[in-house]
Length: 259
Ligand SMILES: Cc1cc2nc3c(=O)[nH]c(=O)nc-3n(C[C@H](O)[C@H](O)[C@H](O)COP(=O)(O)O)c2cc1C
Picture: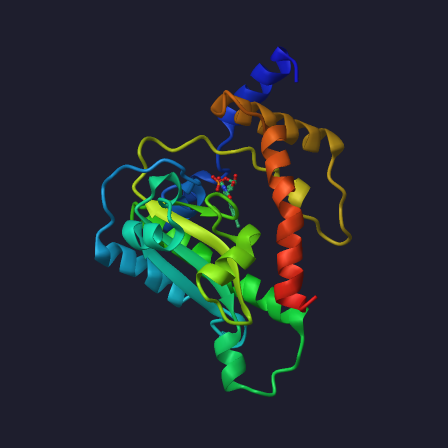
């Protein structure tokens, strides 16, 4: 990326805003959803217990297929996290919830459940993700920020075998994501580049994305990354991520498919 592309892409990125009709701009629940950002820097201010309990309650009440509630939440404060993982909660957050898909409970109750590992896993991922998002949004509504993690600090989808062993997870319990919570240390980061609605939606048959739109998005991602990580790059970050995927794939095949 040349310097001209960098400046132009960064300027475009910083202009990104949620697109909402004027008449809906004051709707508070909508504002909460649209202004949420993944936050990776937290102050030392603790989250009051009743606030954190309300966040968990939002997870408990999330929708799920056949109301199976196929999830478990591993709930941590700074000291129980340190004791369990021998390191601080990522980004020095105040609280963490490891969200797991969990069909173990239901399968113990309903014994003639068909053996359908891919459907089971998909169901678990889908339902647990909804519970995670409910907690994420409830936190935001209560002024608490968060970020979901799949790899930072060995705590998510990319560390399933490690988490299974560390947390003594039984069969049919799959770590999906870790959410870390706290009060944001400063102002929110700018909105990362989001694809336009006509790139991600179609009516009738599937519509291929415009390559120019996708190329523009990639340039904005690279520029945004470069601006916030002086000693790294989007490509370097992708490489780190890719290097972990092989092991994660193996772990999941073993846990989900028994291979
Ligand atoms: C399932 C999931 C896993 C994620 N894993 C990580 C992670 O390991 N590390 C990280 O810094 N951010 C992680 N994120 C946050 C994304 O990078 C973030 O959602 C994305 O860049 C969009 O930014 P926004 O949340 O502010 O809209 C994850 C998000 C999701 C939904």
